Image 1 (tube, helix red, strand yellow):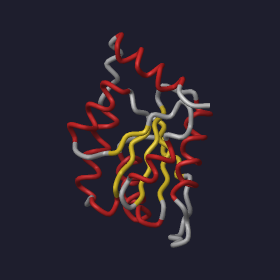
Image 2 (tube, helix red, strand yellow; image 1 turned 180 degrees about the vertical axis):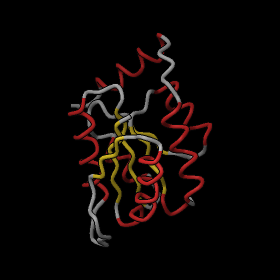
Image 3 (tube, helix red, strand yellow; image 1 turned 30 degrees about the horizontal axis):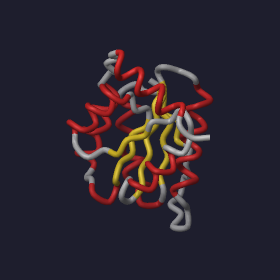
Image 4 (cartoon, rainbow, N blue to C red; image 1 turned 45 degrees about the vertical axis):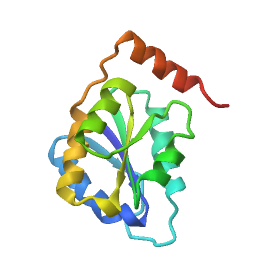
Length: 149
């Protein structure tokens, strides 16, 4: 699976550990962020890079991962892009539900509140859970993609 990943300074270290995990798992990882920590970076920029790359990809086998301190800001920013359905990772059950029911294509991680093992588990759940594609879920996803200007 192709994975586009980025983070602000709060998620920088965790992002690099997750990249190693993903590459070891055979995924094609595209790190769209900086190679050095920059305390002046802004999470909207990271969200934009991943969102634009994912939308340009058009692949069913592509997903996005975003990290910032709380996960909230980067999730809000990503959801500004039509066609992006980003969800905040709270626990495995919520991630599974968001993939299964809402077809999220970007997972947002709160780097200040997760250790590596928990983050890895949430990412694993995100990547392994398929969209159920029940008629009501498809209908709702289309409505979401049609919102906004």
